[in-house]
Structures are given as structure tokens and as C-alpha cells.
Image (cartoon, rainbow, N blue to C red):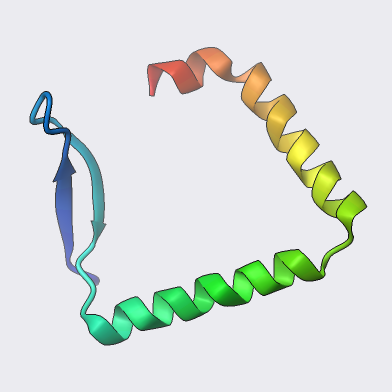
Length: 70
């Protein structure tokens, strides 16, 4: 299990996220995975990316109230 630490909102002091407490090697591996994901995304067609983004947009609109509560 990966250790984590809390991220606090400086205005309220409330915990807003819990993130992995990576060492250097783990952080570099995460960056490499993110780079790979970016390259994969870039390799898809513009139309495919547009379809995904449009679906994401529609989902956000249909769940706007729930998102606002978050």
C-alpha cells in the first residue's frame, strides 16, 4: 500500500485531497506513465478525441449539480 499525505485548503484548513507520498523513483515512473498516456492520446484521430471530449462535456452538463456539490 502506498503511503499518502493530505492536501489542505489554506483558506479553511480542510483536507481537499489525499495524494501518494512518492519517492523520486515512483514520481519519475508516474511521469513516464503520464507521458505514455499523452503520446497515446496524441496518436488517436482528431475525430476520436473530439468524440471523447464531447461525451465528457455532455456528462459534466448532465451531472452539473452533483459536480457543484463536490
